[in-house]
Length: 263
Image (cartoon, rainbow, N blue to C red; front, side, top):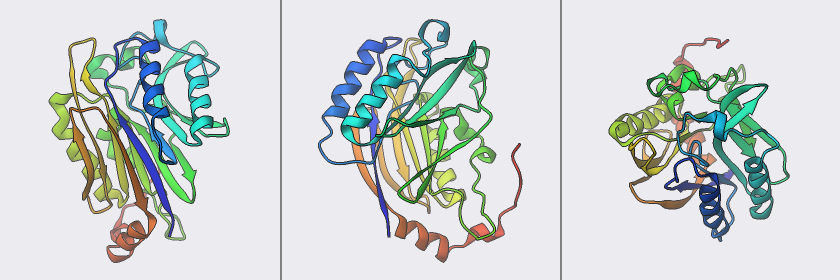
C-alpha cells in the first residue's frame, strides 16, 4: 500500500518582517537532507497573524509565491503555508499549495477570526481545496477553520470511497487556547476517520500573544503520532495508507453518517 511523507516546520516568526522570516525558513528548508514529499509551514508564515494586509499583502505574482516556487523545485517537494494575498482589491488569508513543477493550487480561509478582527480586513473563501498526491487526497484548511466541523466533514461517494485521507491545518493558534487546538485536531481525526495534521507557530507575536506550537499528527483512531510544544522543530513523518484502510474497514462508522450538501 502507498505511503506519503510530510515534513512539519514548527517555527518562531518575526512580526511583520517578510525578509527575516523568508531567510530563516529558507535555511530550515534547505537544511532538510532526507527526501520528503510535502513541507508544511504555519499560517501567515511571512508576517505572523497581522491585520495589516494593506501594508504586507502580495499578489500571486509576488516575491513569496516566487520564493515557494523556487524552493519547491530545488527540494523536489510540495511546499504549503498561508500568506496575505491581494486580488482585485480584496485581501485573503490564502494557503498556497506549490508543486515542484511550479504549478500551484490555493485555498482562501473560510472562517475568519472575528475575535481578532480578521473579518474586518480579509474576505472569506468559498471553496475547499482537496489536493491529490500519489493517490492520497489532502483537505487543506487554515487555523480557525478547525472549530467548524461541518466544513471538514468527510463525505462518502456512491462507491463508498472517502472524500479525503488527510486533513491538514496551518495555524497561528494562541497558547491560551491550546487545549482546544489539541482536542479538536484529535476530534477531527476520529470523526472523519483520517489522519489529521496541525502545524502551528511558536513564540510571542507583535500583540504580545504567546504561541505554544503544539503541532500534532493524529491517526484515524485519534492516536497521537507526533506532538511538540514550545520548541522550534522540524519533524518528518511517513503515513501509511494500509493503516488508514484497515481502520476504515474494521470500524466502518462512515456507513452510519448523515449525508448533506455544503453550498
